[in-house]
Length: 240
Image (cartoon, rainbow, N blue to C red; front, side, top):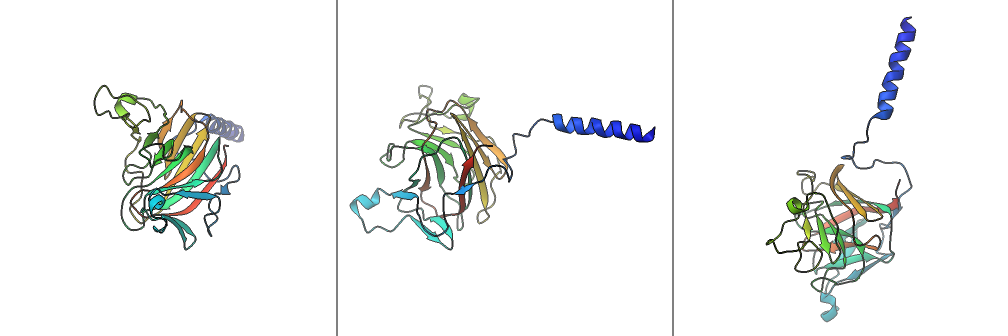
């Protein structure tokens, strides 16, 4: 009798676990489809730099280098490092840190036309890495929608439009505070692009999610935007 009761209780517990909802606030864990490195740890094969300052000064220092097996964005001269291949429906895993001081950088997805905004930024959706604001979206001649648009997308004045143009409300605030680690420690950013939706996790926290994006594929870009940032892992794989 006792054994039958124990068996029934165990069955109920297993059924409850099987029906438990997935925690969408937690980033995808290890395992699943195999990831492919976009950075080989040796050189910048598969990437191309676009640094406007080099147009008039070809001898200007490189903005992106490989150092101690890491891809390093030196921050200056400002520009972008972009994959030579386009990607669609993927999971991107990036491990990065601001080694010396807090500052600015970002990963741009669905990147296409170079220098489409301010003669600097490629047409894209930026997943922000700016210290204290990691996970913000910045719309760069593309657009994406989120719930609570009026609350999370600040306008300079009521007449401003939501969009990716130079005069539009382009910034979409992230969902969390304190998801980032202190300067000098490694952060993990996971980006999932599926059809016209984009999700971003920082250190396991779901920090942003948007839909109805005006692009669904493109290259991936990394910024040089004033601050040195080290990347020890940049890899891509299919969606689970």
